Image 1 (cartoon, one colour):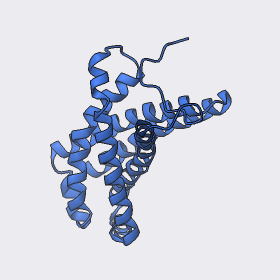
Image 2 (cartoon, helix red, strand yellow; image 1 turned 45 degrees about the vertical axis):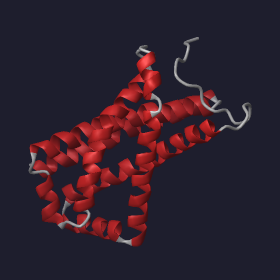
Image 3 (cartoon, rainbow, N blue to C red; image 1 turned 180 degrees about the vertical axis):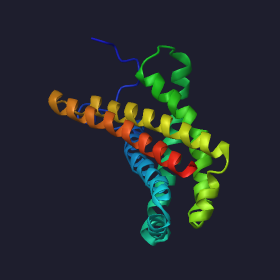
Image 4 (cartoon, one colour; image 1 turned 90 degrees about the vertical axis):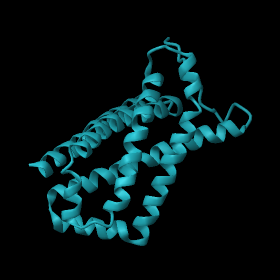
Length: 202
């Protein structure tokens, strides 16, 4: 059996409750919530590609109380997930095995500046009209950062959710089904984003 060199999950039914257990579980919960935030970003660029009618409808939702609540929640979730993930960098420096856990941490490191740039930009873009949002992708830098974000976010999504399934789902049949769903989701979402971006550019 392959030895897992990453940190063990807090199995709350076996081990005594600890503060580190709460941090780890919350880290995984925010990771799942970040998937929803990733989906919102994909929807934003998709509606921008479809046309002003759909984009304006989506912008109206984001500007509503519920939309702002979701955006604030996503921002908090990302910041917590990022800061808590930094705690594991010391482990990464001491363990050089090229496994899924290390790859997950590396993808997270790359995502930090990319997502910070996008969050900073989206704060302004939420208040922009359709034409103003299109202008964002006039810059080659914005296009490159967005594409890199899609690729690394999809990779991190697959690795992170796969780790959760591996640790908490015991039924092998269900585990296989969920892993296939995760694989498809991690491929389809970035693909939709890239295709939408191509339509916008053209």
